[in-house]
Image 1: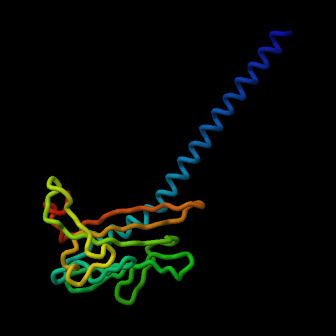
Image 2: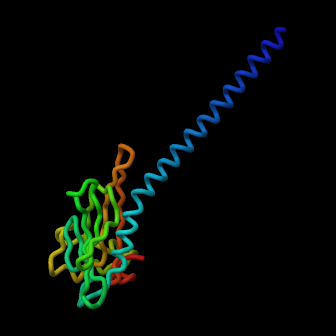
Image 3: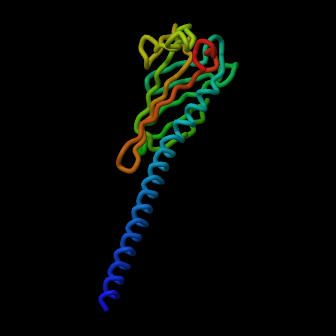
Length: 183
């Protein structure tokens, strides 16, 4: 009788431990999935914006028509057509928009902040040191600097599940030589 009570107790203890291991595994898997989804939600607008900037074309001698800390206008083609990228902070939730001609398209919804940084080539190779340096005002290139801008830094912030995700990327433009503006 004592053996049955002890073996039953040990069996219950082992079963409880197995259930706890299963629960821990399920909770950790859910946390990992939630983190992945949060990164994916923040990554998508960054990828869309970077991909569009990467497609900028040279018009005259420049690829960027205008730029500020929160907006950028790039040339879409060699005919001078442009796309204007901006964060509509009046809309609830905020939206990342692209305006081409008279048509405005929403690229992302929910972004809380957007910031552009503009870079010039230093003329150095990566082995020699820094390939890029920011413009005189990192977030607003002058008219004289616009033809020489070879890269644009993008920083976005997305609210996710009560916290925020900030993502940063730098896009090398087509007018930036690989030999002097990084690999």
